[in-house]
Image (cartoon, rainbow, N blue to C red; front, top):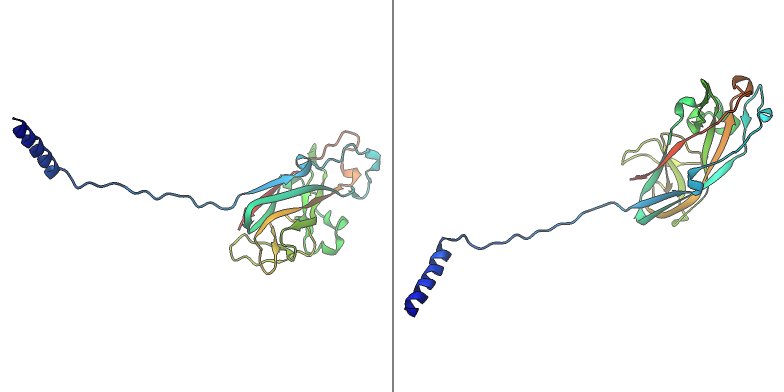
Length: 220
């Protein structure tokens, strides 16, 4: 009986093996390709504060240019990567045209109002505009230049940014004939507000200006 049982057991195993599919297993290969990650920080939480301005200091018949202030910024990437900066005017509809000449007359024909950003409104009146620029930029490849492009395409033409001004809709990077891969960038954003003529503003009441710009790191 033991042999029989043994045979039967063996037979059953053989029969089971005969009708089962050939053994197999799955080999999985997985991974993820991600771009280098960059962080962007702006000093004072991104605020440039002018505080209280006496209405008596606002010129009635001419525009009033306020002192230039700056905010520090830093970009840190986990590896060298080609990046650019772009800027969007969140108050574009409130921009007073024709104020650029009060800040950079030499370049007004080239940039014009594109280099100015809106300061908001009071009632139905546009308050003015401000100019945005770069200063004291440092990065980990010191032998490169500030570049500018009007296109975000991969084959975009990059030219030398001789003004260090930042116009909405354009892209800014650093390199030679094209943007170089960088890991760290530090510098200052300069802000120069210009207020509309006092006769066009309700200077008898409180005027709060609140220009707003979105600064974005672009991966190229």
